[in-house]
Image 1 (cartoon, rainbow, N blue to C red):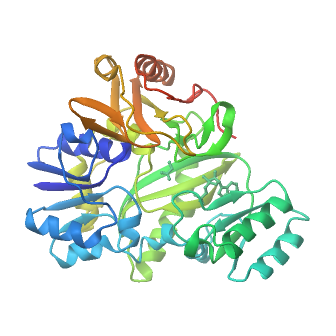
Image 2 (spheres, helix red, strand yellow; image 1 turned 90 degrees about the horizontal axis):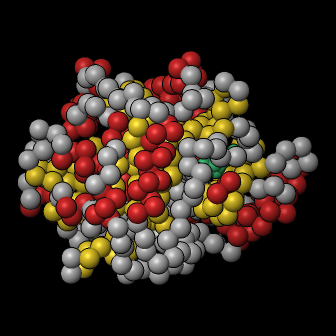
Image 3 (cartoon, rainbow, N blue to C red; image 1 turned 180 degrees about the horizontal axis):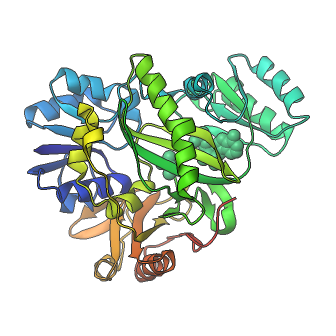
Length: 424
Ligand code: AMP
Ligand code: GLY
């Protein structure tokens, strides 16, 4: 098969690395890819959001399967556009991707099926939103979320009423996130431990992957601003099988059944962001794609063939396949540019990649990198993902940090507490 991966981050490097190992993969392309992906696939300079260019490329190059990394092209309808051209796409339709594309839609679906989730209200009018906050905050801290696609910047977890009012002002009045924030969801703030539960879904059948814990804050001990994710690990010692079964039976399967009932069946990866209190999971959000960096720890542990899983998801045959994961542990540490998630410089040379890549039980997935005259340069906020593997979490963590100690670029920063603490 001729396969195209859409995207150019660490997640897509991990997906490309896994796809390349499949006996079904005869040719691998990535749009736009990065310096790491370029070592295993042919990179083409097409942006993930350029739906018609992607479809034209796939047609011209006789692509059989497209695997989509980020949410934007899915929310924009890439899966249907490819399908119309007779090309298989691993990822949900535009209508099904609304589970990530609209927070209000996702909450309404959760409410309809009775999935445990925080109480919420939806507002199109800033004054009504503020009035709600003034009464609700008397009892209860709230989270203000932009309804639309906000690239991970749309949720304001507020400690005080004035923070929450400011979030409404920023989103709805100042238009700080454009159209995405014109409507907001306000929900009760939940406390507990977060986990990411990613599942393969084919419209009906749900095959879960091991739960992952993601570290969103920029600095150690959960200080600093939110980022796209500074690291993660799996397996989770605090995720008993009964807890996962509860999340599947109360949240994921009912939502998948509801989407089928509405004639917008969900096919692809469904990522449930959960907050767990005691042994009870609550749904915080859905994503319509693999997590980044969650994919970087899941792909190395996935023993089944990713091409076969993707095809079974598209064809509604997941009930016929067996999904197997290694019982080992994986820890991912993200090396970020100085200043990230704010402004940062790019084009800085990266040293030590060769030495780090020779360490046993270490995989390096590139994120924001580019190659120039044989040298790998920084090209984004999150630059590299160092994945340590081990028979225990501790071993995996030591391996990831051993790799981090060998790599250097000017301004580089990373968290030193991945897999050591549970983020607040
Ligand atoms: P979201 O944009 O829905 O993905 O939320 C981003 C992050 O905000 C989540 O990963 C949580 O860390 C946090 N968050 C979202 N909703 C809540 C909530 N109801 N209570 C506490 N934290 C939340
Ligand atoms: N790691 C969080 C996400 O991919 O949305």
